[in-house]
Amino acid sequence: MIIDNPDQFKAWLTTVLEPL
Image 1: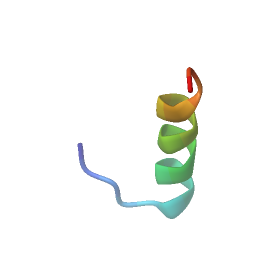
Image 2: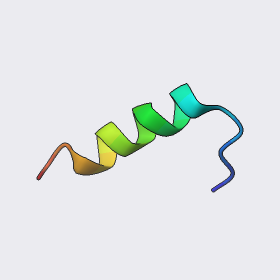
Image 3: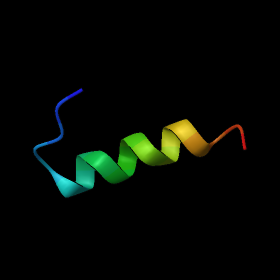
């Protein structure tokens, strides 16, 4: 996965940690 946008990374991170 290539992150070129901090906001995109935050959205992705939120999605990944959602179940936790």
